[in-house]
Structure formats: C-alpha cells, structure tokens
Length: 326
Image 1: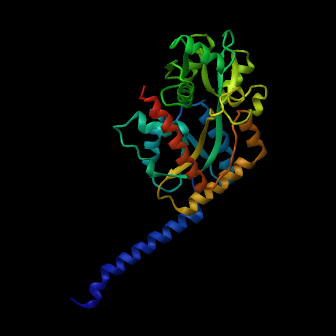
Image 2: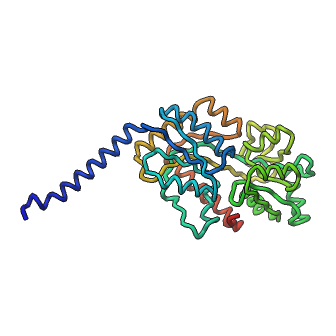
Image 3: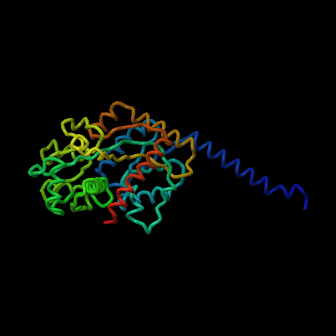
C-alpha cells in the first residue's frame, strides 16, 4: 500500500476535527442567531417563574433575540431538566435551576439524576421565607410555636407546596433545631397551601417572601419572622429569626441559569455577561426587590461554588428529615 494511502485516514480525521473546532467557534461568534428557550421547571405564577420572566425580558434585549419561557413542572424540577437535556448543547436552551431541585436525589433515590450534564451560567436571585400564621392565630412568634409544640407534641401543623420544597425544609430545620414535633402537610398546589393556611386549617408556614407579602399586605396572613440574616426591605417591621433568639436559623434559596454541559465556553461567557448586565438594570433590581428577591451577579465559576455549597446544606437538612416523594 502506498504511504500516501496510510496517511489518508489520519488526514481525514484531522480535517474533521478542524472543521468541528471552526464550527464551534463560528457558533460562538454569531450567537445568538435565533430565539432562545428557557425551561422553567415550575408552574406559571410561582416565585421562580415570575423572577425568571422578569430577567428573561431584559436578557432578551441584551442578546438581541427573544427568550421564550417554557414551563415544564413536576418531580422537583427534574421533568424540566430532562427536557432541557434532550436538546443540543448550543446555548439555545436554558434551564432555571432552583434550590428545590437540589434535594431531588433524596426524593427519587432509585432514579439516576443527570445533574452532571448541566453547567452554571449565572446566579439570578436569592429568596427568603417568612414565617406566617393565620391572622386569627394566637401564635405571635417562633417562640410561641416552640412552647405550644413542646406542651402538646404534634398538635401544630405547617404547610408547604410539597415535599422537598424550601417551605418544607425550612419547617424541618426548625423542628431539628428546636427539638419540637409538628406535622408537615404537603400540598400539590402552592395556592392550596396558602388558602388552607389563611382559612386556619394549618397553623403556620415558612412561605416564600414574594408570595407572603401580598397576603400580609392584604391582611390575610400574620408575619412572625424572616429567615434571612437581616430584615427584608419589603418587611422592615418583621424581625429575623436570629433577632428572636434563633441565631442559627438563616435560610435562603436561589434561582440561577444553567445550560447543557458541552455548550461552547464563549456562549456561556456571553450569557453570563448579558445576565449580569440585566441584573444590574435599576428597573430589574426594583421589580425583584418588590418581590423580596436579592440580586447578586456572579461569574459562572462563582455560581458553581454556590450550587455546591447549597446542595450540601439542603441535602443535609433533607437527610435528617428523611424526606420522601409525595
């Protein structure tokens, strides 16, 4: 066989790799050239959906292409995750990751969850919970809950939008830190949990601040504490848990954007840059602040470190509570 024929497969392979590299660079340089889809793994109107839409609107302007929000709720965000991972790693499908998805491996231990197939783009916002009770309740603060729960173990119940949600894990953390016994009542619809709390069918709830504020302002729920390290600007008169003697009780949740692993680095960097620009716009900050959401622009690497730390924290709470799927 002539020597030139021996080198032909190598030359063909080299040319294929070169074309692939050039194609990836071309993709990154021209990105984006078509609409982008953002998969939100929660129902419309939920806090993550609302904040995601606010940011997507401005991010779309920076990128010069529309961002279409596609709600794919269910199974702690993993249904939407699976949908996003079926798409190419080209930056045209974004996935909104929330803290509530971090405990999915505990809820579905027999189901392999492909978190490793996602990589961070950037942080969107921090959210906090408000400890609330019906306006007619005799409970005035977290100390009253502890006193009542210890006097009559199991007599108090707390609501959530489902097992593994921040409201559920906040309630479990409260039980763990105070040594109390209260009954968790999960709902498959967020609105039903709030409705039954207002109707005094459950006793308290660590409700997401963005959902709690309208109910508090409308006189339908009574605020007792916030779970942040400091008071929320939208609820300046409501003390933190720490101010009321629960110094170790600081809990927050995050939302952030992800893409499929293998997305060109230049695309991830462009998305991160435009996301942080959008978060820095005064009207975006004001709209998010009105929902008690705290923005903190980060690099993709910094957001990856946040995900790792938050995963360890939320899963530690979940394991101690032995949480299971609804």
